[in-house]
Length: 257
Image 1: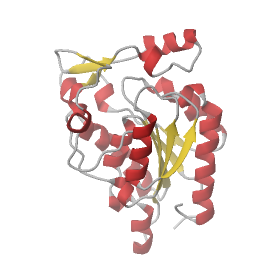
Image 2: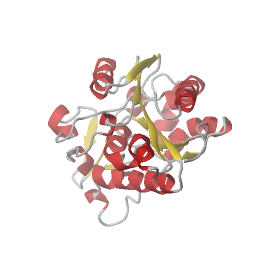
Image 3: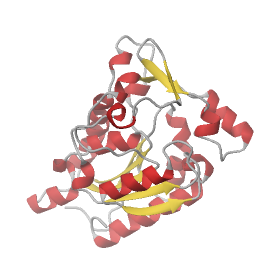
Image 4: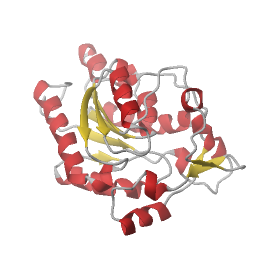
């Protein structure tokens, strides 16, 4: 079954319009604390030049995450899922009940997903898509070829970074397949895996009041950080401490909190 104090592997599920580079500070800070960190690529943000890119949906992204989670769980690993922004939808869709620690343990199976950690993340119930619930965001730059990106990223995503750094990250913004907007959710991982939701109090993307509602809907323990939308860049040390504290609580209780 593995040691009760075994360090979980952290799966990082990123948000829209960015390369994984935007999460390297957080990934590296967690690794420095001794956590194995896996950051899978999302198909809706990868290989834009290849035919079929614009057909990649949230379902494809969720399958990519599920594949990595399943690989780790089948190795007997405990998995702690960290999700940011759009990644909240992907992780919630990806983690099915058969992969949860609480489902596997009574069956005598090792490993499993022990906790969900959301920050500035979208959460929707089954049967709903982003477009169903929110309509088209005025911040979106929708292109005629099935791609979209975000306008004014420095101001919306990175406003609490120094100007030069915010502009640098804005220059790295990439296109995403628009199909993710239309994908309806089919799974609610928060229904069978306990969760924490960190509200970014100064967010200019999803409003903090919405974030609180997302956390309440998921039944999460809600925490707050005085950051904009990208605390993995602007408040790396504080966010790392928050994740570390939750993981330690999970380890102390043997599974979840």
